[in-house]
Length: 398
Image 1 (cartoon, rainbow, N blue to C red):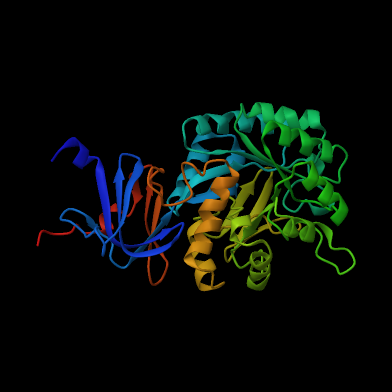
Image 2 (image 1 turned 90 degrees about the vertical axis):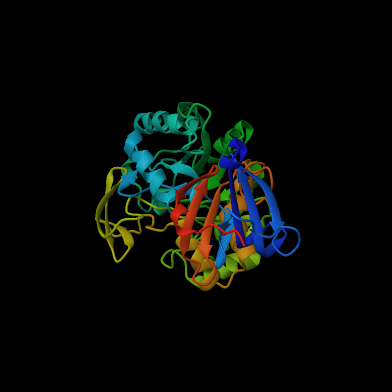
């Protein structure tokens, strides 16, 4: 066996969800950390001895989570590198091969310290970037953020956090109706950082102003913002109807009724929907008490709520569950689901030349699910199996 053969993995007999559609009996070849070939088993790509037999399985691109606070009992807001590694590893085992770590409202200096720690993990290719959710949000829609720590989005303060991330700030969620909000949106857009509208009490007109100023994301659409009224459409309608905006949705069965998620898809389409977890430390764990920044959260029956006040405090969702719900509950096609879990967020991050779809030359970030149950079976990141490598037999010589 040559060195090239040892550095080569072939997945044969699988259903492949490609950008152009679904291929049955496909054959996917990985060399090093890249996808090197994609063929159809019926036409010129029959399985060969030594290939891994993935009959009965479906291969999709690795999931991309734009908005996640923690998992595995650990939090990105801890400012502790080991905790951050544990959180990233937990979600990786559930198919999230690209993670943007989200902070939660805290003192500016503490958030800057957290950003410095998380930046090192971006530089080590553990994380893809940093998302600041708070403190520049509305008191009226603060949810699981401490009201006394909220700040107006003064561009100088926003810039301080951005600079603390050493070039790795990916997104900042803010309420554009607050003093300095629109100026901060413009500044972030000029810096190439995503300005996201969220935890906001904004009206329709102000939200449109924010979009015109450069806001391109709706942070967990529907949640922590005014509901739609027939004479006051509010931020939801403005964000849904504008083609420049990508809308985050949490498909955990708690944050959104399935029909509301269907409404968002029908309006925006999968090319503008990014499915996220908004997960806190309890993701991948059981019920109990967990920290979320400076606040305490009680998880009961998988639902996270603040100990004081009872507000929903993020989720315990993992993206493999969001994948399964989207297909089995919402009836989305595999291509629609993959677009929202991988291609759309990858494009938003400017990483779609490397990740987000099964194409030759892209990084071998793969998720394997059972073709009947859609349960996660295996995960590969950068050409190396993370979980599930022992679940497949090799094709034997005839």
